[in-house]
Each structure stands twice: as C-alpha cells, then as structure tokens.
Image (cartoon, rainbow, N blue to C red; front, side):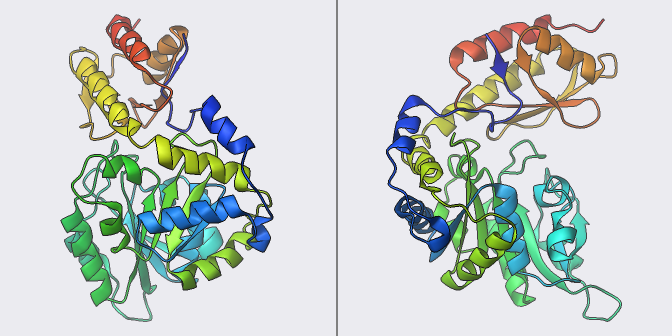
Length: 341
C-alpha cells in the first residue's frame, strides 16, 4: 500500500469522473463556444453570487490574473508573509503586475482588519500606492486555518474606506465552507475577485475558476490569453470540475475527520514537538531536534508513506479524496513505530 499525503493535488479521477469527461460536449473555449466550460463558469459564479467566471488551468493563473486586474505596476499588495500568492507563485506579483509587497504576520496566515488598516501606505511620493489586499481561506501555511466571516467583513470595510480592492485565494475555500456557518454567497459579497480551485479537495485533475463581475471577467479573458491560458476544447477538463462540484463536496468533511485522527496520533508521539491545530485537511507538525526532518521523511517513505518538508524540522500531511480509512489506520499504526537513529 502506498499512501500519498504530500498534497490534496495528488488525487486521480474516478472512473465516474472520467466517464463524465469523455462524454462532455465541447467547443472552442477561446471563441467562448465550449458549452461545458460555459456551464461550469455559470455554476461557480452562481455559487458565489457573482456575475461571471473564467475557467483557467491553475490557481496560480487565476490568482495572478485577478491581482493584475486589481492593480497597476508600481503599486502595492498587502498579504500575509506566508501567503501562496507571495511564496509559491514564482515571483508573479513582481513579474506579472510589477507590485511591491507589504507582508504582514498573521495568526496562522490570517490577517486582522487592524493590521490591514495600519499597513496602508500614506499617499506620498515616497511610497508605492496600496492597491489591494489578498487573503487566503483556508490558509495553506497555517495548516488549513479558516477565517471567520466577521473578520473578513471588517477587512472589507477597511478596504472600501480606503479605496482598496480585495482578492481571495480560495484554493481550499470549500474546505473552509464545510466547517463554518457562512456560505459561498457570503464570501462572494466580500471580495472583488475569488480564485476557486477544483484540483485539490474536490479531486478534479486540472483547473481553477476566477469569479468576479462581468466587467472584470471580460478583461480577465484578455489577461488569460496573454499568460498563455487560452484553451480550446477545454470542456473535457471542465466536465471533471462539474462532476467534482456535484459529487465530491460531502467528502471534505471526511477528509477533515481523518486529519483530526492523524493529529491525535501525532500528539502522543515523543519526538513531536508541536502540531498546529487541525481545522480542515492539513496537518503541519514539528519534530524535535533529535529527529532530523529528512530522516523522518525517508523512514516514512520506506513504509510507503509520502509526506513533504514544510519548513525547518516541520512536515506537512494533507488528507484527500484518495486517502481512505484503511490508509488512515495504517498511517496511525506506523507513525509511533518510526524512530530516530
């Protein structure tokens, strides 16, 4: 048995998803003539209460398009110092949009309205003009931490009062929505743009969707083309997203339950210094200095369990659609047996 906990991106389409993909009705999406892509875009836009949406190959692309639309070269973006748009998108903030970054230290990646307000630059020639705030919900580096709606609303109010735009990196937004008392429309009303990933917890092989106003999505199509994201018969991929939205949302709660079990197992192991609170499907745990992190990863690999390093002496594990209870039992029996040399 091989257990891959490196990410929720490692899932593979089920036969039913493949069947949906192969039976998709397609057209040329650059001509805006692929009916399955159009159906997916309309569905995701409606879920978040937005006017329009745009299907793209990746969440990095949807994030980068949104940020490009909401800013101008030489301006500044406010985000957490561990945010995906800053750390994991190849310097795209600078390369694609020419932005300066104002990096804040949030609580497991979550910013507060007070932090945002304090960070806004004065209107002076010395400073880049603050243009937008980007949040991430759930927050990857924060072990899948979730924003409370009241804090999001407070941040939005600060932004509106200061003529700033707001973008949400919602790579795992459906994981958040599975655990809170607010809904997707509540989230949609607080952001100018939202990136929604289909290839993580939902299990689709490819794709993210950018949702926004019709005016912004019209311009987003142009930016997508510039970035090389104009796909042709993309309906085969969009069909996987439609299947995922229709069938895989309930499974997110099971992913979260299993992650909690792994967290509980780790809490009883003597070589574990700390594990961040598990709110959704991401487990981030820190080993003590007596157990080098690469040695830990290698020893797990010998047992056919894959995890990734996530900072000094830390590893990340992510539960997902292809991680079942049999695998969970195996991981929880194996972890206490892994010992330092």
